[in-house]
Image 1: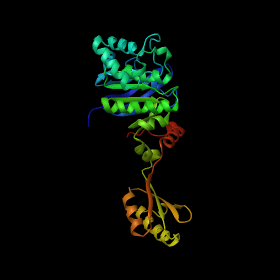
Image 2: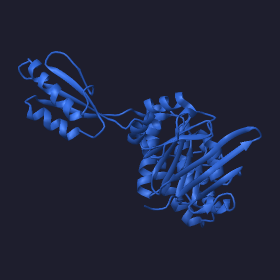
Image 3: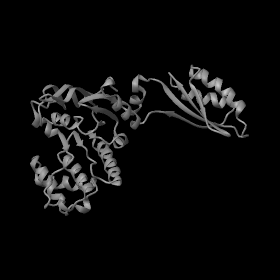
Image 4: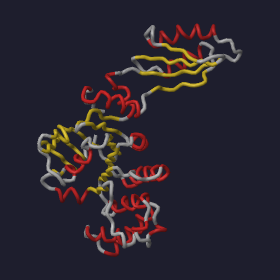
Length: 331
């Protein structure tokens, strides 16, 4: 496995008596989209500022692309693109002018700066507005221009702090899709900070749940679902139907078969009426294929088979209701 491109170790930031970030350990792998999810005031932005060397930690270390961000912040800034929640542009200048200016600040020669700016405006869907003054842009257009702005220097990592604030639902969908496409096409590592759980779930490979300055859980959605409250069980729903409409005998036989497969007498729940019934089977082991085979072999037509997992909404609320009572989990 490749070494982490962002690595935080016991990272802590205190302001007097207040602890904004508390002993944070986090490793983000190259090429992944990692979502830092938590309510406003959880410490997400403070963590990002320490990653960029814009504020010093009270204790602990932060390394980005192998560089100590506290000791060498300028080296980090050369390799990382950062888009805050409110992006500053020269309102009376065009989109193209703003991008060229940013490129020149990064010591990119003018001909190359113009070529990169035009290419990026096309990539983010703003080629038609290249000559338009930014002051006339909508919030969604400004966010797209912000993506182009952080990409102009060809960074290895981009950090997006609440990138969808103030954008309408269709604009959010388009922006998230654009972030995913750019990550894949450019091989970028993306850290996305947000308090909108559904948006994080849409595009992130892994999610860190952040509350009260602590990372209380980290992993992909499936692993967080399984690890929730120490739960390592698997649940599968099985839909079956009898073509004659008389299912009682078949269901009676299936009760025994599925309970044996699940290795627990209380593992089977049945719902549904008429000729269709849905079984929910809980087991300590993964049983999806074995259940499908059991249903077919016992003569009940199989209509559906699907794993049951807690969504990010369930995970988020369960962890946040428990708060610090939950132990930190690494996925």
